[in-house]
Picture 1 (cartoon, rainbow, N blue to C red):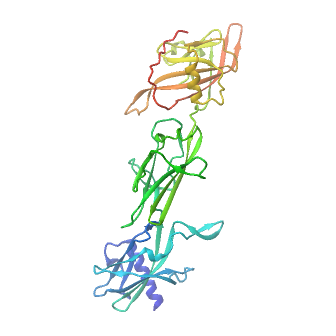
Picture 2: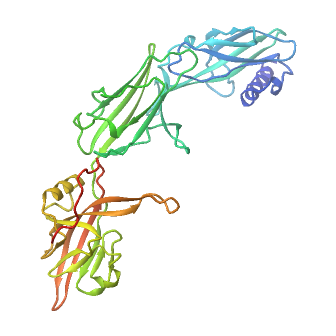
Amino acid sequence: MKKYIKQIATFALIAAMASCSSDDDVDYTSVGGNAVPKASITRLDTNFDLPITIYTKEGVTATKIEIYKNAAETTSDPTVLGAKVSDATIKADGTATFNTSTLGSFDVFPVTVDGEIVLQGKTGTFPLVVVSTYSDGSTTRAIYTLTVGKGIVWKVLDADGLPKTTSASSGVSSVKYLDPTPVNIYYATAKNGSTVIDKVEAEWSFDDGVTFSTIPGLTPSTTTQTIDLASLDYVGAGVEADDEVVFRFTVTAGTQTDVITTKITYADQVFDASKGGTLSNSDTTSQFSFADGLNYDSAGTANAEITFVAPFGFKRTSDDVRVEFVKTQLDFDTTNLFEAEAAFNSGPKVSQVTNLDTNQTVLYKITRNVNLGTTAKPNWQDVTYYGLIKITDDVAGATSQKLSFSYQEGVLYQEPETTPVDFNVAP
């Protein structure tokens, strides 16, 4: 008979959890009712009255509800009563509660390490058995796995652009160094009922998480927070390009804490991948566009940006092309966009260069009007690119001259220029 009752109780639990709109979902052929906890908790909820929904058949009431740890180790007998947790408090409205403080430590959940189970997890589950006694003399044993989740979690944007989806990570791994464009990460604290969150601490580390300090200028919220990584004074804190910063957010509720971390690289701003091109005094390859990497003949001036000039050089195709050149000693393979900008600003700017030799480098700055929107919703804006050219070959024939080169471009994202640029400089 006990086996039969346990089977009925298990069925009742599954039915109740699947659809709790009414007690009509439960078969009470052999038992007077069923009692099912109706919540999950976070590791901050160590003093929370966890609700239990009671289902009974007509004329029957629950007289006692006991909570035990489930000591079952096999599926052949899934309800082995372990240590008693507490007696639930049955209320006049037909519901019940038990306080999570009776569960014990929230710091020793089993975690598998190298194939062995150790008790060190900060989140996990409490396997429980709810033993209920009813006024008709029947009892049930309902299995319930109480999940203990994190007290602070990362959020990522959902399809509507709102930070609602819980994530295992912040969703951001890098920010462009000195780029003011906002790069946001989001966190949210999690609790139940009357649990009071005392504080959230926001810290960062510049030595791979060994030592942490408070993030200046940031006032953490105890509910949800949006942090713009680009707006923080990381430069003032000593961060250089390509440095990694570990961010840590710690929530405290009473004696309980929980932590989330993320590692962000403030990435150097570098050129895009290099491409190849040629220019010559032959009409078919006399003009070139850095934007599309294509050659044009004399009829394609409207699409080209530079045109070949003798001896072994090039110039902008017209004054409508907003490009300037600076001969430089920059290393093509290692120069970043900050170095390119500094070299360009300090060098003599011209609209054409000649007498170029193999392995010589030329720096250029070009402003194009580009569509940053879509075809349906265009957003035309001026965008400035820095480019670096390396001459890879110069070939002279009896009447011909040809330059082969590699080039790379990039947009340097930083605070906008306040000084207008004059592109009409004499060669």
